[in-house]
Structure formats: C-alpha cells, structure tokens
Image (cartoon, rainbow, N blue to C red):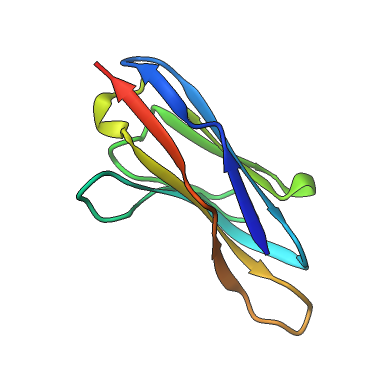
Length: 120
C-alpha cells in the first residue's frame, strides 16, 4: 500500500491550503484515515482523523479552522486548512489503516509528508 500526499506549500497568515492523500495498491478496506504533523524540533502529533463511518476528531489547536473529509470511492482523505497561523508550519503526514484482503488484519501506512509553511 502506498500513500501519496499533495497540496502543501507556502501561504501567509490567515491563508488556506487543501491537502490530499490517496492510498493505492492492494486494498480491501480502509478504516481510519488521519493527518499528523511534525514541526522542526517537535514530536509528530495528530491533527485530525476520520473513521470509515465518518466520525471525526481534531486536535484542540486546529478545531474550527481545519476540516478533514474523505472520498471512500477514491481512497482519498483531505484536510482543508483555513485561517492558517505560523504555528501550523510543519511537515504534514497522512496515515491510513488498511486491510489488504479479507483474511488480513488492519495495519497502519504512512505517506511521504508534505511541507506547509505559514509566514506572518
């Protein structure tokens, strides 16, 4: 299973970006899809997650500004980021919990990361 993330870039304070991440390969089903981020010198942290049933959860720091969604037909998860702040600057990673066949168990898979830079 491969995860390809895109949509990162540089924006000014208050701007918006939309990240996308598509899973490909041998996929039977996808459970939770999520976005993490890692700022320089800091640990990777969960930003938002969405389950196969549509339940979402967000880090307190992004609530009301970020929206996670997914298109199950396309095996894709999105992160709409609005009202961006300099402290949102980080490498953003997507994660998908995937089952490759009916008999397999679920396992987590990481994308390559996409850089988001917010200037003041």
